[in-house]
Image 1 (cartoon, rainbow, N blue to C red):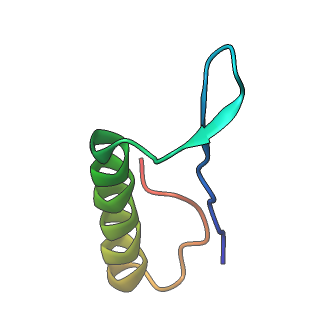
Image 2 (image 1 turned 180 degrees about the horizontal axis):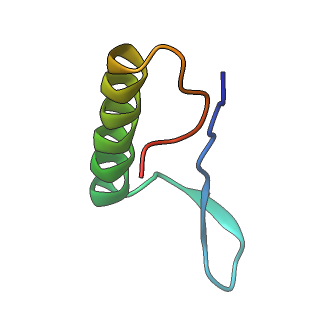
Image 3 (image 1 turned 120 degrees about the vertical axis):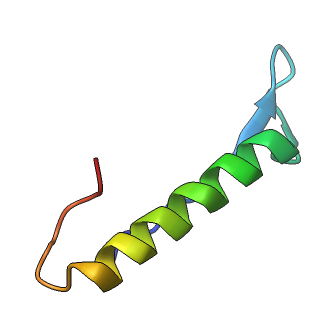
Length: 49
């Protein structure tokens, strides 16, 4: 299993900020696509194209 831990920092100050909603949504869509692909292709070990 591959884990992804996104972090976001403010430019200049290198201060932690919340992950923007647009990025959260894109990552969630990607996670769902990967899961659907994994379930449809149980022998596949990579990431969907």
